[in-house]
Image (tube, rainbow, N blue to C red; front, side):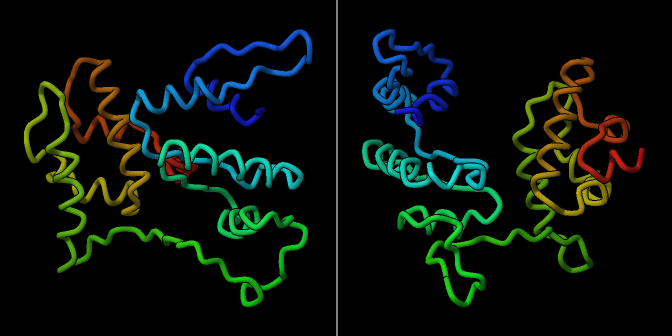
Length: 202
């Protein structure tokens, strides 16, 4: 029941304490209804490593319940998420985790994210990503191809990592809307601090 509350909070739902039992009201039904109405297809559980050992079995039971009722995909992230999820689904405590990966191999897929290169002869991948961002920008003064003209600057600032690129472009676009320039320019990028490297540089 308590696992319904974070989902209810996410949807902005009010929930109260039952005066007779002094427990929070179970919000599962309103949450399921909201997810169906919004056509939710993906649930991201961030920081799964912060779930207490004693709560693992209950947590995964609840997530499995939502998955069965809504036919959604569930992605778990956090430090050691692969092992935690595998053990949680088998009702095993993390304190019993084997010491080496050879002793316990997860059947869950793991994706390793590498930066997109911008070396001679390998520019197409980076340019393809920038083209997608460029064609989806909805700034009044945006000129098609403007991000492609900034490809080297963007790669240098982000190291070729998608998450940093996404943050840099989105924050710069938001600033361009607020200051009414309505365009992503070299100057706008230079004024935007994104990520640890930028902060340390200052």
